[in-house]
Image (spheres, protein in one colour):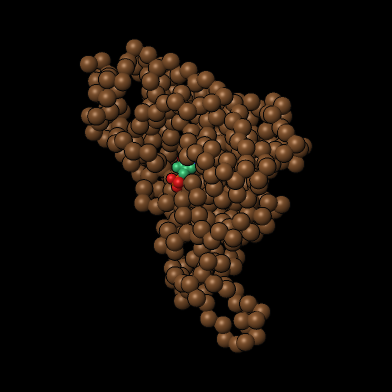
Length: 392
Ligand SMILES: *Cc1c(COP(=O)(O)O)cnc(C)c1O
C-alpha cells in the first residue's frame, strides 16, 4: 500500500500515526487488514509469464508485511527494511548479507551473547573468521583491519555492560576501507539513534523489545541504506525467513505509540537510575546518560535519548547468597530475560564468563534492570526492600 505520508515533511509523531495503512484501500477502516496467504492468483497467461502481480507468492511478501517494512524504513531513514521472526534471526540474516567464506569479521566483545554464539558456530563453519574487539576501541579499530575484513559489527550500548561506542570514528574507518557496518540498535531504536544518518549500512532492531512493547511478540527488523539494500533484500529472498502476519499487525500497532512509550521509559529509567546511585549498596550505575557509564560522552554527542534498560554494580561486600535473598523475594520486579515490555524486570548477569579480549572488572556483582510502567514509588519501595535483604 503506497502511503502518502512516506515523503512528507510531517513530524515523527504524525508520521507514526499514518504510516503503513491506507483507509481508502481498506473499505474505510482505520487499520489495514491482516493478509495471510501462500498462493497468489494470476488472471491470464500473459500475467503469469510476466509475473506481473504486485505480490507474486506468499514468501515474496504480502501487503501486511510490506506495510510494516515501509513504515519502519521511514522511521529508520532507510532505503528498505526486511523483517525476521526474531531479533536473532535478523542478526543472522544481516551477517549472511555482508560476509562470505574467507572473510574476516570484527565484533565487539560486549555483543549480545547469542550473536557471539552465531559467529563462533555457524559463521565459523562457513569459513568466516570472527575477531572480537574492545567496544571502546574507537578509531584504533583501523589496526585490526585486514585485507579480507568485510564487516564491522557494532552494538551500542553493549549488552548488559552498556559501553557506548564511538560510532562515527568506527564508521569512518569502515568507509575508508570499504567495509560494511552493521549495528544492533535495539536499545535506542531509531527514535533515539538514527543509525543510517550516522553512516551505518545495516541497522538491526529486536522488535521483540520496545516495538512489541507487551512481551507477547518475537520479531527482528533490518533496515538498509541505499548501497546495501539490494544485497539485504537478495539474502532475505533466498532464505524466506519471513514474519507471521499477526506479528506484523501487532508490530504496526506498537509503532503508533513507540515514541510515547520510549519517552516514558526514558523518564522512568533516569529517575530510577539516579535514585539507585544514592543507595549505599550500589557502587555504580551503568546507564548511558550517567557519567559512570563508559562512553557516556559519545551517548551525549550522538543519541537523542535513553531507554529504560540499564545495569548496576553492587558493593563487593555482597556475595551471591545475599543477591539470592534480594532477588527471590521481589514483589514488583520479576526475573526474566527479554525487556521493553510494560513490566519491570531484574536479572543477575556476569560478562566475565565469556569475554575474550577485554577484562570486565565490575568489582561487585551485577544486576540488569528494565523499568516498566508500574508506579514509580512502588518500584523504589520494592528495590529498597530488596537492597535491605542483601544485608541479611
Ligand atoms: C533481545 C535482543 C536480541 C534478540 O531478539 P530476539 O527477538 O529475542 O531474538 C538482539 N539484540 C539485542 C541487543 C537484544 O536485547
